Length: 439
Ligand SMILES: Nc1ncnc2c1ncn2[C@@H]1O[C@H](COP(=O)(O)OP(=O)(O)O)[C@@H](O)[C@H]1O
Ligand SMILES: N[C@@H](CC(=O)OP(=O)(O)O)C(=O)O
Image 1 (cartoon, rainbow, N blue to C red):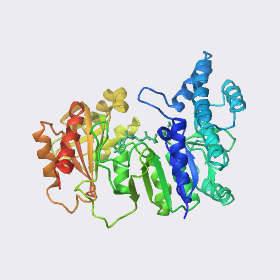
Image 2: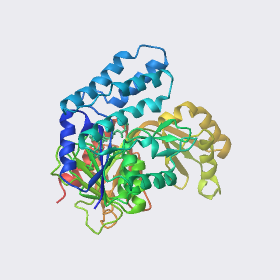
Image 3: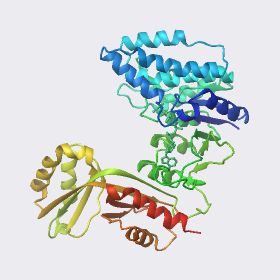
């Protein structure tokens, strides 16, 4: 039995957290390969080391004083080392980092040092081998992750290591420069390592007891989802449930390796199991709710639009010309509505509208901004009648005005458009009707 265990920043924010992590790893001999993140926040007001590293690099690059920030970063690691009573020093490492900062090794290099240093400490603490991610995780010249090459090199390298610590978040390009995944990318490293060793399980340890039915910043103490499919999770992750990086799903899914989201502060909790498919009936009709604010809708009306071949394509081509991706596109007989990210759209608003007029000569174009999208996701919805009806009556009851509904053809999700200002209320209403009051 082989497990890959990834620990997020909050799980490694202090010496005390490291001790919890040590206990978790020692409690199960199959936890052989460890992927640490950089130290995260110790409390709400604290800063993540990754953010401090970005700040430090930006200051050094702009020729400003960066020493105070670098000292702050050093202190974070010193506190962990002394708290664990380890006999090691990172002084030499910090000299190299500072020198490279000044020689402009790059912003990604700077950010990656958070995981690099934390992994050196973790390897020392556990007595595991340290394997630098720069030697086993690769990106091409354009910065795209090279999955096949990485898999080949990583599996060969790990076959020679009984136990190992591999820093999360970064790898290298062929010229040796460091490249990171996007923020939260240690989840991706964990997944890639799990694939390479054909792990039986990828455990992703964080500060919540699994994937929650809704964002805990909106719903107090939401229920934990026991089992969720990759597809359901992808829908939720895309719509803002931020517990796992979106790209972390693909490598393990290909190999059929389940992911177990666990809580470092409550290791006795079973967490959430993420699987390809399951015959387990979900506890509730819906599996989860997620959403995002900051959308804009463009409603286009034209009599007999439905008979005009290529109408939709011509409209979408206008958005494409300005590099704007569309999120949803519900349509009626004489209307179609395109939902886009407000931040992407604002700059080109007038050009897009003019383009639509030229392309399809509509009768009417109307826009609305400050909208939010809420996704209600669940494999159980297909088999249950009246789900949409329950959602709308709950929203009406809470006086939330529904601007749009879009049911995906897979019947795995229902997307609802509401005003930004109604976003939290909408999520609460849906949570209440399906979770609090469902038995
Ligand atoms: N549906 C959800 N389920 C669980 N956590 C969620 C959800 N939506 C948002 N979150 C947030 O995601 C956080 C965990 O992700 P992250 O901060 O990346 O952790 P880590 O530092 O361990 O990688 C939780 O603390 C929680 O606030
Ligand atoms: N430290 C990086 C990568 C990462 O995955 O961190 P975490 O596991 O704390 O989300 C970041 O902050 O983006």
